[in-house]
Image (cartoon, rainbow, N blue to C red):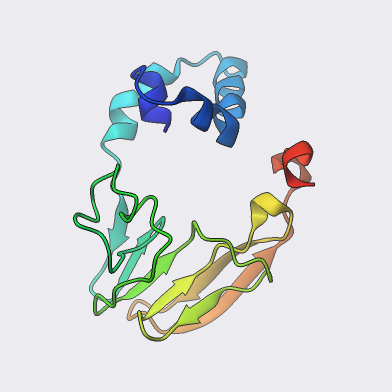
Length: 153
C-alpha cells in the first residue's frame, strides 16, 4: 500500500487509514523523504526462509495462483484462507487471533502469531529452533502509543 501511495497508484485512503498517515508524520518529524526509501522498500523480500521455516505476512494459501503476486488476494500479503502445508513450518500473522494466543495448525504445519495488537490485545512472537521446533511464545501488552483509540473502541 505504501509503494502504491508513493508511486501515486491505487487507493491512497486504504494505506492512509491503516497507519500510512502516522508513517508520513514520522517521516516528516525526522525530516526524511519517504521517496528516498522507495527503491529499498520495493526490493524487500516478501518472506524469510531457512530449510525448515518460512515467515511471511499471510502465508502460502491453498487458493493462491502465485503466492508472490502482491496483488493476489490469496498471496503472501493478503491471504485469509487455509494455508498450504509446504513441508516447512510457516509463521504468519495478518488474521488476528482475538483470544490473545498464537495458534498452531497441524494440517498446514503453521503458526498464526497475530494476537490483535491493533485491537489492544497483545503483540506476540514465538521462538523456534533452527529446525522449526517450538520453544516459547512471548506476548507483551500493546503499547498505547500504537493505538488509534477511535478505531479500536
